[in-house]
Length: 406
Image 1 (cartoon, rainbow, N blue to C red):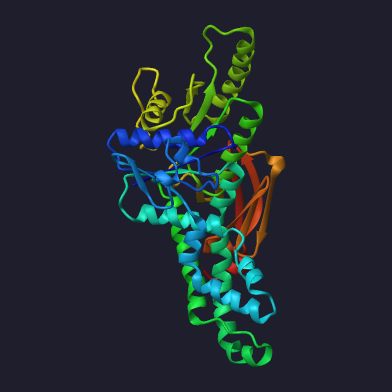
Image 2: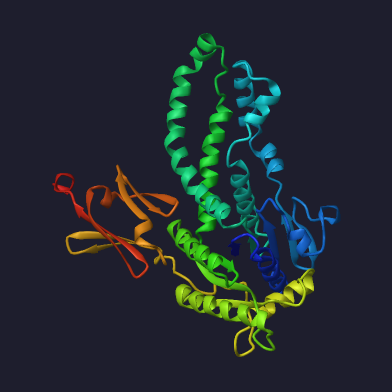
């Protein structure tokens, strides 16, 4: 089972790259689903169809072996979290909030993103597909989306047991003291279920069969964002297996205006090759017309993945990247332990490291990840850290007070 996510700065052509990859995979005989987590929903446009013609919230076959899905987060919300929402509406109504306002307040922040991820998980677990291609939202939204499973899971794991204990002890008092309805067992069960489901989402997204492909255009601002995105994806444990450089101007027969663009793009492409190596960089020329429809998209992808010898790389395969054990490792080094985390292209000046109880908090740019330390490292103190050759290495030394007698 393969899952490939496409992301990039808005307007670089990630939907075309995702749709083309899915179309080519279907042409090669893979049973493929391409779905969009982007609220803009341009997948139907890419295939020359619209919602009235069939591209909607459920998978619809647009060509033999290829299905398209544009997620409807509101529909999924009403189907999945109705009990929790009804409880919140009741509480707000008792507290004096009008019914309409209560409905609006129960639209939880981040709910659409969480539900999109749950739909991806459901499709992967359904067993219907050889390949699931995800057309993600632009980079910033995608990074928030991919950070959610672990972050929300971390909080829910700590809050849910406390909520259950408090609810049991206070349930008889709530109605008498404040006139508020106590949460039913079903509401508490929903929190526990959400924790479990987020864990399943995280397992799908970090599976060895899942990878991310970065789409960019050879422009300085876009390349700079793509570099930061690679670092952030690695921080959260996601594998990037290729870079797609889209809308590359052809060098032949260039007039002065286009020749200037060719020179500028060539300089950026050299930086891309140097920065993102050893990841393969696939180039898509600036075509004379927009690829719309199954055949045009499949042809676009065939040209994109074509090697110098004329052979076409199978878009289904993991094209490159870190192995399972390379993203995060813990090793013994003499009397110390070393936790090593892959952070390609990270800038030391944009990083921060902190220890918080049994967790290690790593911040890169505007993104933060909380690592629950394994039991051995919980009994250690941090004695040093360094960023070298694209990896953060944190050194731990056993605390004698905690290791004594072991």
